[in-house]
Image 1 (cartoon, rainbow, N blue to C red):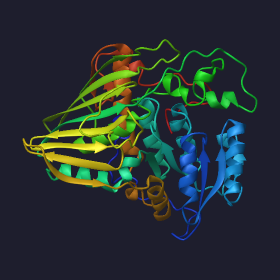
Image 2 (image 1 turned 90 degrees about the vertical axis):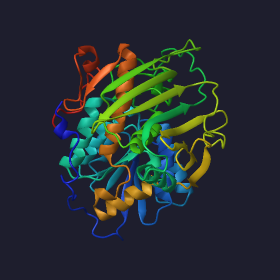
Image 3 (image 1 turned 90 degrees about the horizontal axis):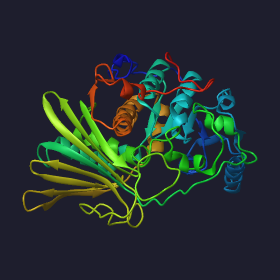
Image 4 (image 1 turned 180 degrees about the vertical axis):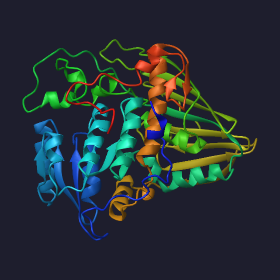
Length: 434
């Protein structure tokens, strides 16, 4: 794995290629891809923006697709074009950008295809399903000079921008450690039998790069998150938001050491990924060591540092970050608020609650043809995704990984290095050369 394709300097491809958009006043025509769950948030976001048209919808489940088309028409909007095959959508020359909310195992390949077709891309977190894809998705964005935004909403929140700036300016002193908290109440998914593919579901397209397997309800809508073929567990579902905030606040890129331990506790069901996980990272950049500790829990848990008490993620959930410094600590609750506690007496310090709009930021960058406008450029997202993938690999092989950021490999660990990528099912292959 050649790192020069992965972490490019900001000077490379700084300007995007010419677009069909002649000015900031031109209409941006967006296609929303994967519209059952988070894709509905994409539709709502673009529907509320002036001079932005949802020109197309794409989903492999025709019942979901038809429902969204009807909802848009009932809202008084023009009926979008409809597709079940993403590749057909990309042939539509009138579409300026695609907004992807499909399962994780599609994110990188669909982003690469869209870049190759001359479309800008908003891609949901995580932007990759494995470390190899993290490299390739950035390479494609740069090669084709496309605007590619990673869907971590916190990057656009006014409060969190201020929080990170305060960390840089030393509000809590020398920041040596961050914690990511992903405590979400999630019940058992049970066991579901093999059954015929539901009418109107294009299952082969849904499987895409993943191995051919018989259809079950647990491997389909939403519960795909808990299977290695398609998802990355909750550290890659909810947790990638907090992982990105941890790395952003610490001001680090790649770790030198990763160790994760956990398991699938309490429930006897179809889930493969752990519902409890603790991952620890060590960074050594510029001769200064820092730590990151990430925790996933799927059941009853306490709140910490006030995080979750406002029920921003529902009763019983604690989702956020804590940064520890030589002069105090900072607690980030969800995506839109932070508080600081200073000195040994933990006196209240700077605090703020204010969100932002990641989709609006994306559209602004598309209009201006300037990726430096992006709050969550895909390169930043890909680095955070790599941290998440390394935790899952450490968990799966059952040992600490010594990671070499130069070669992007796990030192002396062939089993771990095999998990940096996957076997792709043709023709859904993430290319070695984009």
